[in-house]
Length: 151
Image: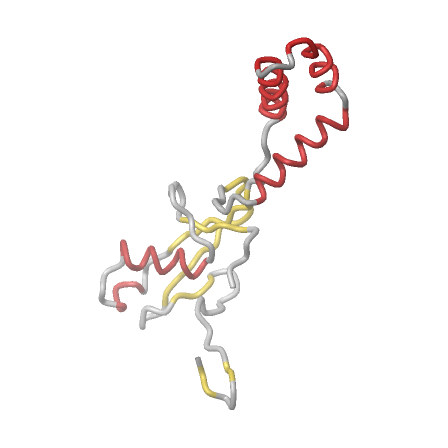
């Protein structure tokens, strides 16, 4: 399962991936030669990014409150428009609009990079397998499940 707090991409990439493996696979599909032996001297750098939180800016919250109060004045409550404006200035009203905006933002599944936290360097052996340069660990590992059957 992907780490939902991180994104991975090649330096300067516009599109990022949910996992380090997905990013490497994309690099291999897009840039790599089909002959694994040619990978032996290839180094791939993959950046790891945090996710920017979705948050509606305060000025948009203020605008939403203003739209509601203006609309109520236009829709027949003209005599009470000053009361609508006074109500709109109360902290609990602004907090309710903030809560609604935060709920709306929580439904957005699009993720955008925020801060660069690491650069993973991958090297290859003569057979074309990728390894993390820092640890020597293979990029892909075989999982053992049910009765020792590799998957």
